[in-house]
Amino acid sequence: MSRDKRSFFDRITGSISVPDEIEEDFSEEKNENWVNETPEEGELNIDVYQNQNEIIIKTMVAGVKPEDLDVSISRDMVTLKGKRENEKTIADDDFFHRELYWGSFSRSIVLPQEIDVDSAEAVEKHGLLIIRLPKLDKNRSTRLKVRGN
Image 1 (spheres, rainbow, N blue to C red):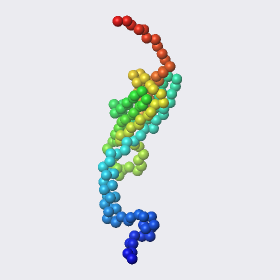
Image 2: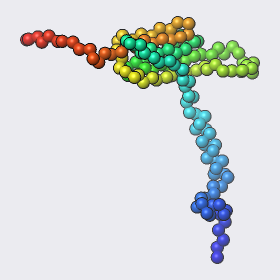
Image 3: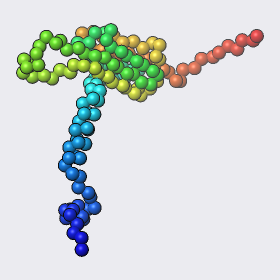
Image 4: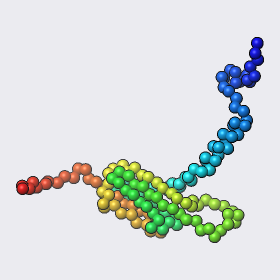
């Protein structure tokens, strides 16, 4: 009778043990791929609210120049992108505490209602970005005159 060299646990679960060398090779390969991945972007905190005529989005973009902000809008979505640059004058060893986010950030907001893209506006003042998005009035109607040729 041949003796099974698998552990009791491996025999009752039907699993197969992987030799340590193979497991180490796999974990090193996995770590190399992880290091090469693109860094994640930060996400902006936002307030989104409405009044009778428009949807308003507010977010803090302190430390970002207005020309470094990219605001893309469609009738039902707004995407904010930018980059906050850190001054490289302070050595990492000289920090006692770090909480501020530096680097690229983005945020996409699906709007609850269609907006008038051509009338939208964005203003930045003292680090606060305010985006005003006029709502489309779907109930509005108009009469067209029919012209003859």
